[in-house]
Image (cartoon, rainbow, N blue to C red; front, side, top):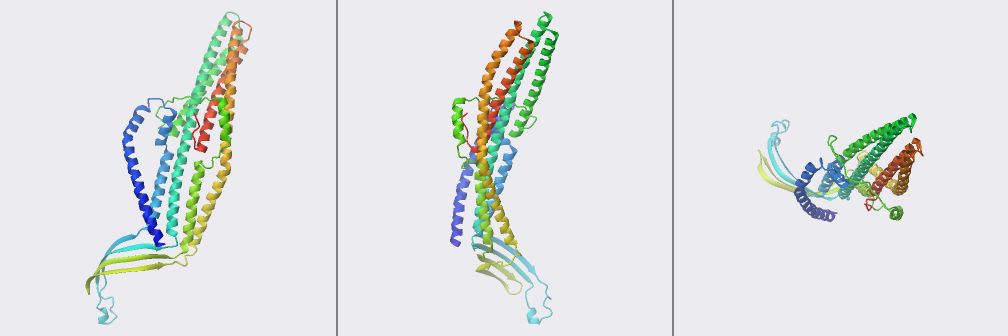
Amino acid sequence: MCLEILLSIAAVVVKDIKRYGWSVLCFCLFLTGLGQVLAVSAAEMPNAPMTLKDCVATALQLNPSLKRNVEAVKEAEASYAMARAAIFPKFSLSAYQNHLNGDRLGSMTASQANLYEREDYAGLSAKQLLFDGGKTLAEQRAAEYSADAERVNLQITEVDVVMRVKQAFYRVLEAQELVRVAEEAVRRQKAFEELTKAFFEAGKATRLDLLKAESQTMDARKTLAAIQETARLSLVYLKAVIGLDMNQEITVNGVLPVFDQNTLTASLEALWTSNVLDVNPDIRHLEVALKAAGEDVTAKKRAWFPELSLQGAYAYRDRDIGGGADEWQLGAFLSWPVFDGGLRAGDLRRSEARYNNIRYARRELELNMTSQVKEAVSAMKTAASNAEAALKLVEKEKEACSAADALYRAGKATSLDVLTANADLTKARGDYVQALAAYAVSKARFERLTAKELER
């Protein structure tokens, strides 16, 4: 056991040297690029439109959830350092000056009362743990696994933030595209209203036709106003996800992803059968947390073992009677608590319950993960199919709208035919935009579950 502790101390020292070396290197690189990053953020972000890459990079710097997880990692690493410290020798300095009552032995004989009244002491003591049944080493491993679990949890938060930023960014693009579709619809309706008004004045259209055209124009404007408000709210949500101040004005630059349906179907079928349990960060987090809980159970079981330690001290003691002299002591000490009222047993049961809780949570996540991935793939396939159908429908409705307008001008179609054609074209364009956005959002969800980037 003593040899195991010494080997563990040596391994910790080597690990610390490597860790501190990497920390110094990363800190130097951080200082090198910090000025440029701050200059870009301060100078370009308020003015230049933000791309998806810019939004993600900014969110990884500003998102408060990530900052909280960074602090949680620091806390877990500090706990590991505290657990690791138990295997190192402990040194302590102590000193005191003690004055005793001179008549404390008044009931005794004079020879017995001739004792010291003042004592000065200063010394150095040391203690090295030799054996405790492996409890300290198990606690150290549990703390190390807990720190690893917090690091994986930080990665989970990162991919969650990236997914949310992507989805919010795509929703902004969707709203902006829908605004353009609604603006085009207003222009078409306004042009048709002016045409119908000219026909009415020339006696080629009825008053009812003019009222219908004006009504459709007002409806198109109301729809445009509602979509513009949705676009503003989508920008607010994007800023909240990134971590930007709500008063800061931003614009985005990007397009919804367009795909080739022929090549997409084959790739989605391959994704349908892919195994994600080995790469999903949530699974990895529970695996590491399960190891930490297992080591904690081991530590609680080893609490019944005795503790053997090597202790020594070197000191100087001076008394008013007898003078002063150096003194030292060295020996092995055994401590074995035999009864604590059930404290250790309760602590063990609590650790075992926590271990089983994590084990069942991992099993539950494994069962749900495959269905979640397949659901995301299914949503991607459905959105892609809808986008393909909507694109074909847009081309068809364009021809129908042009034909209805030409027939109406020639007096061979009614205003209702034109209004219906315009409404169908607007709906087809809106369906196409919404299908592209649904595909992009589902794609971001799939990338979050599988921790992989699909081809753009």
